[in-house]
Length: 387
Ligand code: LRH
Ligand code: MN
Ligand code: MN
Image (tube, rainbow, N blue to C red; front, side):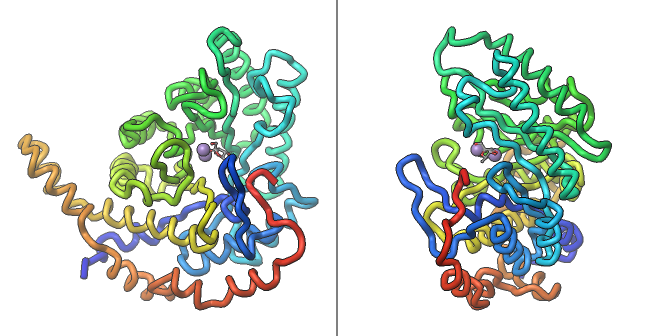
């Protein structure tokens, strides 16, 4: 069995934030299928997220999305989280499901709409104050569909102004992370399409504004680990939204489509000092359209843990020696040796040493929680992506 003793402390430091929306029903524009036992409100989403942490020890926080996770008292929701052994984390804003934002939100040419979008973000900061959350995560659907539709440049200027107003409202210990995405729902141009735009906009704000990298938000073939290395170099990598994709922004289980890419990303994170570093938040941004949601999230965090263990196992001395000698094949072999190591048995033993189940997935299925929620949650409407 692989010896994990040298990386044991590093593994113990791992913390992955879960998205509340992964516990609601979701789908494509063709159909949202129901799944038995799906959470009906933010309280049930948090309870379900807590199960993932209970069986893996990997997921101590839950991200909220406003207004999907609207509740009367966020302090009460935070209490509920703590009673369940987790905490509330990042607050995500949402300016993409309101008719007013048809032509933009923080970039809109009409000052009234822009103000409304800014006010939504200020409210999100109020929520953060109540929950003790550190990060406000902003992803904008803003953009245009046709060349000439609007001034690309004027929209950047308006975005800068709106972000500055939001940034000024943040507390000393709070941060703003700006997520980029190269397309969808806008198809000609997106106002924050790439890490460069996110970097430029957040650099203008200050040190507490960082970039959020969603692994599904790049053109096919993009070398994402290069972006990771660059942002860490610049001190601007604030957070990850992990998921995997075959085609577009598929939001599938992280490590499912391309486990090698996940390994390469985590290797750059570790080399760049971004691992176990409070400045870099590791979140999932996924949807479970077909599979059960809690096991789907358990699989996800275990995939991240497995890739992390492999990335931590790279023999750096051997790698550097091969690199210095420009021995291309030897360097690549050192890298691949770590990736090809089967760490599953060793990780199971590592978990058991810490009082966790060796096989979290089996332990969850045996716990009866899934049967209970399927039997109990029959009334009401299951929460869905967007409600
Ligand atoms: C946009 C996005 C963003 C949203 C989430 C639901 O595609 O990745 O992070 O908040 O999906
Ligand atoms: Mn995302
Ligand atoms: Mn996305």
